[in-house]
Image 1: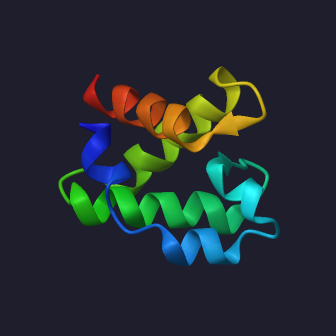
Image 2: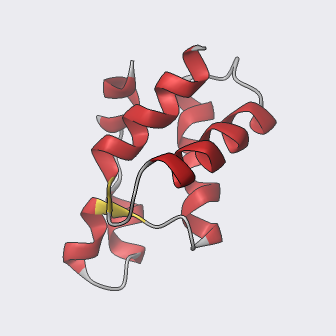
Length: 83
């Protein structure tokens, strides 16, 4: 399930990150990154409400310690949404 989100084109996200090495990590402190992930997930899974995705992201920001590898973080969010 997270694979469908992860295989999407993330180049615009990668380009916006300050450092290229940063692109592999998700920052909960950046509102644009949280908003980006909401849009990305809802594009692939439109049945998830925006509020459900936001809640899952918030929970994973607490659950996954920084630095948060993007793959691990997206997997956490998708697991939360499946519940």
